[in-house]
Image 1 (cartoon, helix red, strand yellow):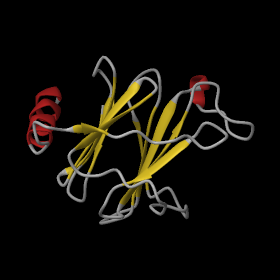
Image 2 (tube, rainbow, N blue to C red):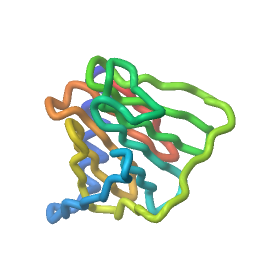
Image 3 (cartoon, helix red, strand yellow):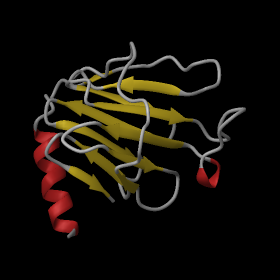
Image 4 (spheres, rainbow, N blue to C red):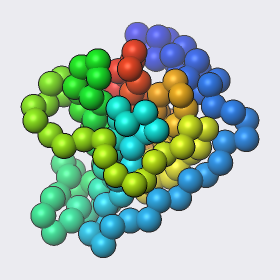
Length: 143
């Protein structure tokens, strides 16, 4: 199974151009950062360590929570410890709107996480690359 993840990640990373640009997002006053993929099908919320006044992530954070609308609605949460957690059909939630578009070919660093955007999908990983998520219309991976 681990080989499958590695092979899939290699394919998705190959879709990123060698000249990937670091994209910087401005945090909201509560410290959270939201972004959407250009397709409008995937949206994520980064919550910093310690959470916000109204939301505290599991293990105190930080965390990235990403939703994919189609072909099926899923949510994957990547926290500071252990593998990302997949929730199939998380119910009615708002997703995938906003002004922060994560352009294809770019990368971003959000606290302890690094994310890459390509037309093949979204990849977010911990700095040590031991845990992460990959979302696209055709793939849903969490490790």
